[in-house]
Image (cartoon, rainbow, N blue to C red; front, side, top):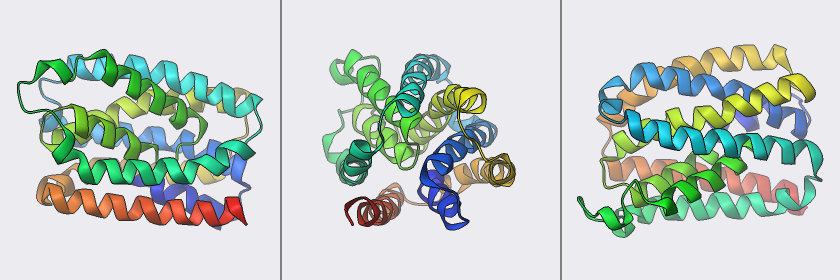
Length: 227
């Protein structure tokens, strides 16, 4: 849920949207680092899965970052709220849509999942806020694993797209480092603590909390985009 609050927080302290977006993406890398430390139990035995998704998110994140720096943002701003709402709905419905355990036809090795992860990672590199919800929703539907294990993979895999985008933004973009540094420190701590919360909360309640937060962000972004 980090990106659902970090981007609005950067806007609230006065950063213009494009700089806030790049600063947010750079800082979000530290969620993945913290989550990797805090999710060692959930990540056990998932090294191959993380590697496959990491390759997809690394490539997609680079493409999304390039798109951000070379294309007008207006059209994407109009679409983003609907993407976030769609991801929230998908996350809530994921238990009804995902394959049964042992169903390899739609399992985590399928090309459809990698393609979907690649598509979301483009969005991550372009506009990170809400991307974690979208990625979690897709993985929760297509990977027949407990939500805590899916969330651990999502956190680490999304770090690859944030990392490559952050490098590009740092070199040729606009990152407000005075805001990025304290935000990164908080995200590192939150990334490490978050898995403990995920373990403690019922999966159904967690899905609804994340979905509600995502809809709140979507409404806020829609009010800005369509006014």
